[in-house]
Image 1 (tube, rainbow, N blue to C red):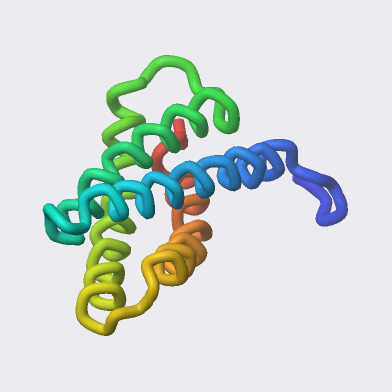
Image 2 (cartoon, rainbow, N blue to C red; image 1 turned 60 degrees about the horizontal axis):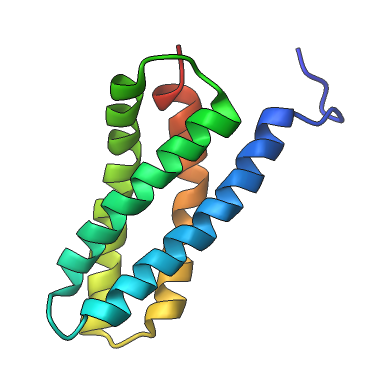
Length: 131
């Protein structure tokens, strides 16, 4: 059993990799919005950016944090369950706050990221990378 004062290396790696993933995901989301917002709906933009960011996050967590062997397809699909549910929720929030209410894309995306970080850790520990 781990003592409270001990540092868990996996949690530290998760936070570091998660920080990098967050910057990448945030940049992809806003970048795709800036590139395509005049041509396509925000929902499609959210869909495209989530496919890219889920794939990047899965790879970085698998390789650098959880370091699981094999099971690439199964874990990738499980990552979609974890991230997919959050992506649907995040896309709905994005549409609601940006398109309907007129909030700033930068602030809205940042708030959505903060909401989903805790849920993704729990989902990955308990489901995606749980052998």
